Image (tube, rainbow, N blue to C red):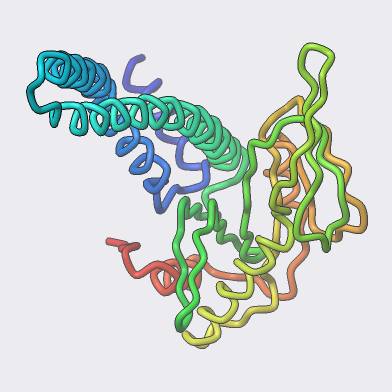
Length: 271
């Protein structure tokens, strides 16, 4: 019985999209921030304490008619400790944002993996270079019906603007108070990514007729109001069906997908 269950499990997995490349950039950034924050946590109090001691020692020396040179390094240490305390807080805020972005990308990957058949390949965190230009793509999906360049955002609040705008207006409301910010519009951002993907494909002799842009907003409570977009702007649960229902000019074989994956990112290897 256990063997049949295991065979059934393997059979089920075989119908899932294949993840060819895992996300690594955000993980690396967060690891670095964790290490830096851990060090800052240990030293900022020491710096403040040591600086305070030196300032007091310098003041006492001055009071008794001796040299007060200890005050200068003491002030520098206090300043350094305060700066490191502020940096520690900034790091924690950055970690929160990066964790939200990483969680959103992981959710989108999981949905695509389970919602698409094994005729699709998923390259996460795929850096593509053409000449002097490069683009860090959240996800590139290769399938029989084309190439899908997927940009994920974890923005919160109400996002308003036009598809061609460089920035969107973000309105967040908390405790009855609203704040507004300008945030980068992912639609033209992903259009630039596609330019580089297409250029890289042309360098390798690949046709570029069926490259599609998809934008996914992973915050389920965000309200998206972008006018004039012919690019799908989706929530995570919509992405698999959108990819599957996209019409293409050509049909792309698995061998073609493998060659393209290795061409886009030379680090991708197939057995």
